[in-house]
Image 1 (cartoon, one colour):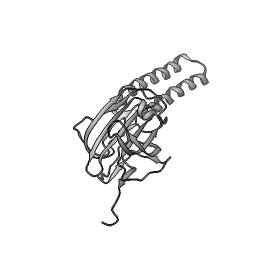
Image 2 (cartoon, one colour):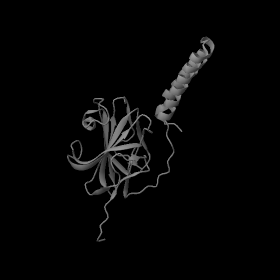
Image 3 (cartoon, helix red, strand yellow):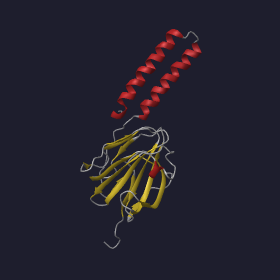
Image 4 (cartoon, helix red, strand yellow):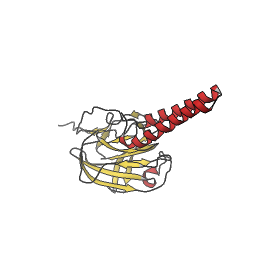
Length: 222
């Protein structure tokens, strides 16, 4: 299954690959050169298809957990000052997506969208410390039943040139549902309450809508 954001690119890539393969077959007499060109065209098509793949995932919705919004690797876990919306301290968890990861963004929690804003910006490499505040990005805040307001930020990387965000202020959203797409290498930051428990570690690989990023801290005296 492929994401709708890739339909046009997939169609164009399919026709280009087909044209190159057929042209090589009819107009290039040297066998090894013909095969090399055809294999390159086929490899290009496979790369495009794998990039826009959108695997179906059965989500066990849980108000007590924040799920990973994307596939990738955890590159940041720290307490920071979030200056755009909260203007205060939050726990930040950042997930880097390489070009080979699934690039679908999924809602990390159920709730209501209370803030959604697009920011034009630079195209620093996605793991750069200033990418969260200087790169092209979208900032979305979800008001959840248990965690209160949480923020996630889609960040374009050096290769990413288009961020797709479906979240609109006032929408009621469900954990694990499709929230958008970032084309090519990129990153997503989560800004969470200080009193939640982070359940992942640095360099851990996570799966969107599957891996628990944070949970409610249980009161031992309850």
